[in-house]
Image 1 (cartoon, rainbow, N blue to C red):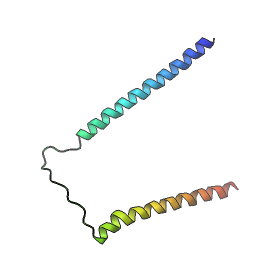
Image 2: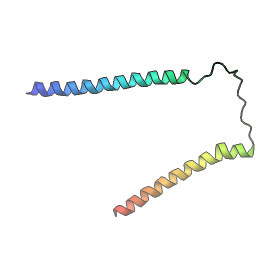
Image 3: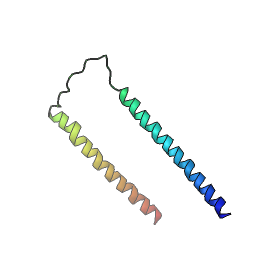
Image 4: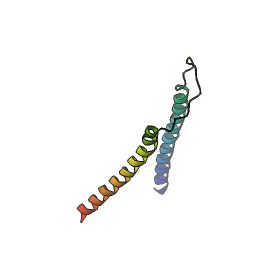
Length: 88
């Protein structure tokens, strides 16, 4: 009886392991195919220019993301605090 349980457990573990391996290989090939599909070969490629540091770019690329991140952290804390108050 004990050997049967061990056999069933090992079979379940092997089935899960096979599924994970197949999923991993599928994701690996998907990533490879995705990377090949991104570069157009028929268009000329030029060197990218750096972003100029105007006040609009500083506001959009630096201040706004930091502000959104701080707002998100604040919002999560308020949400948790509200859930704790409801439990009391």
